[in-house]
Image (cartoon, rainbow, N blue to C red; front, top):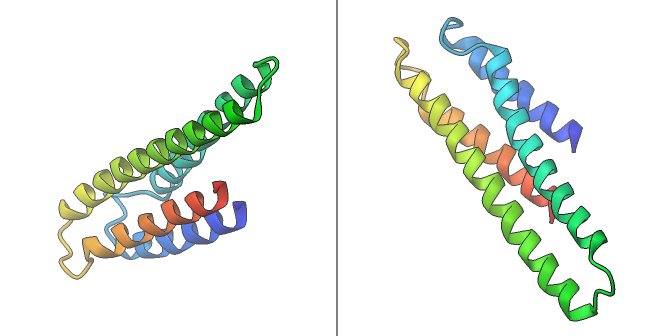
Length: 121
């Protein structure tokens, strides 16, 4: 998972390095990618701790709790990824160089979100 995130981060940084370096720094891109990972880890760990603390859990309750966990993690990761993509695209819009497409940044962020989602489920 770390290798996937790192390689996608490097791809994003290569695109960003072609852009105006004052608008988006490499640290900003890595911090935004890190926000997705941290949010997903926090939600997953929190739900797992709750599941472990429930005493005498039957199989039916476990299935319900697991399905709730899947929904919570999916919503959290998607919302963080969308917010981050919007921020990056706003900065790309503010740049002078018209040959840098918003789609490139959005496409990279989609791959990050998809890689995170596939890892957790």
